[in-house]
Length: 282
Image (cartoon, rainbow, N blue to C red):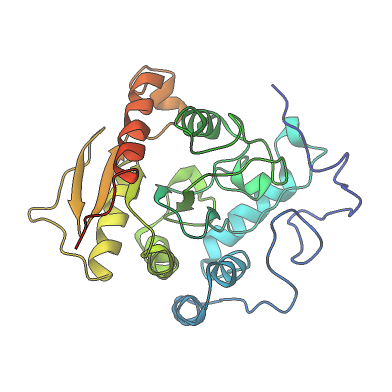
């Protein structure tokens, strides 16, 4: 099924380039030409630490250039494009978190898809994994629409936020350990911003699970020892936050039946049930 582009032939009245230039009007783009750009891992740590709000962090993330291999790949894909999207502009930049700024539920994925988030500029938007994820969130009452095709399509998350462990689309969907570690301060800062409201974290896949456990430890939480093993519906609680594992809704899992709609719904029903628990009285 063809996806709906941002305007016809790369327009929306703006004539967007691929990759999209910051500040040119792409929906939800919080960066401007003046947004500071990270070129090294030290820059990432400094700029993430200096962000004073979720919006400021999102802006900084969306212009990062700290990982040369990922910058080259995401921009090459944005120029070459997939034939079915040849007339669309590609975002071609890192994908910031998206959703509520004070969520009860945080969904953590691996990285944007080359022709999904890297094209649309919104996490889990415009690919088959996103089709599964947003449909499940909608059934659970955590998204207003069952589909998410492009930025600016009217979709909204309810009590929920999404982030990727690595914010750029990687070749073969496989970031290196160095790229994972360079991006880690962004997740750390995001967790700090949402700490006051967060009740549940859903980790999609083993990579996100391991990155999340490390981030929780860096944030000062005591993760059980030995470390909890990833599995579908695996869970543990730390300082009132329920962490739930889920198989990733990749086609490799959904086409083979390793992940079914019922299995996915179980994860988010559990997340909603925990998020709806009243706070203990003191």
